[in-house]
Amino acid sequence: MRIDDPGRSWPLLTLDRAALEHNVATVATTVAAAGAELAPHVKTHMSRELWTRQLDAGAWGATVATPAQLHAALEWGNVRRAFLANELVDPRDLVWLRGALDRDDADEVWVYADSERGLELLAAAFADAARPERLGVLVELGLPGGRTGLRTVPDVVALARSVVGRGLRLVGVAGYEGPVATGTSAAELDAVARWCAALREAGAAVADLVDGPVVLSAGGSAFADVVLRELAAAAGARVVLRSGAYITSDHGHYRRSDPWARLGADRLRPAITVWASVLSAPELGLAICGLGRRDVSFDIDLPFPLVERTVDDAGRLGSARDLAGATVTALNDQHAYVALTGDRELRPGDVVGFGVSHPCTTLDKHRTGLITDGDDVVEQVTFQF
Image (tube, rainbow, N blue to C red; front, side):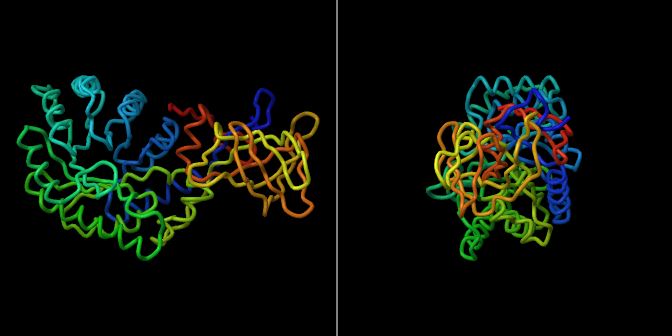
């Protein structure tokens, strides 16, 4: 099968097999070498097929962001350990999770806590649970002006004591370092390091409340080098990284911030290409492609025109030609405005391959994708958003 076989149409999302395999292996090896564990954030793709590649590479468990994602992941059948990186506050979801753990749908599920109210709901739902040890609680550290999480280390310690006082199993402390910095300047990396030091301090302060090594967990997609260095400095702690976007990386945000290269590993490779037809060439230097906000991310950068390909009368793609210098200047719902340099022209019917910035908000616009080796289709994957 090929990406231009009859029955397919543009826009079409493809994932380069070599890039996927390189990224999965690079991150798994690098995290293990740092003495940490990996719980990939599968909200990036919500694909059983892609998660299986991460699991086969040694992932401890799957991280999710919402109860709906947790439902879906446990239904895949090969997620035995999961980490919900948010506080669980809906009584309906709490009842469901208790039932899932009592039924042996998972060996272990960890959840965040950042409030007494959240703990009250959690403790009530799991009172007299058949397998209470399968639920683990991590108290979340945030930062002033940030999103969720307690604002100070003393507040984290106080809530951790409340976790234990309510008969729940405390496993450690966690948070997300992303809001601390928007770039990778020396000053911004230092700010991330200070946040990690606060998380390390919180972990040390609650370690006596934990049965076993205290867990320290952070994200790491953009700042894995800092997170691994700073958290690994906590003697006797168990470090769990929750990076997600690494599996596909991208041509923009994560290429610029690639922390794995700063760790001395090979750079991650962008795996996603979204292919779209040229619909119109209404004036010199402008082409309109059938790709828009419903098809590709635009929250960090607009998509990047990578290559152009002609299409023959049977719909077969010609060889790829570089589109260096071309830029997307605007997106509508289903149209991309591509500005061309010099006397470069695109014809209606040509196909353009676009790179993306921020894979999460590209993948969630598609229900399926194709893992490819060149133009050959290796596997179709499903996204459960």
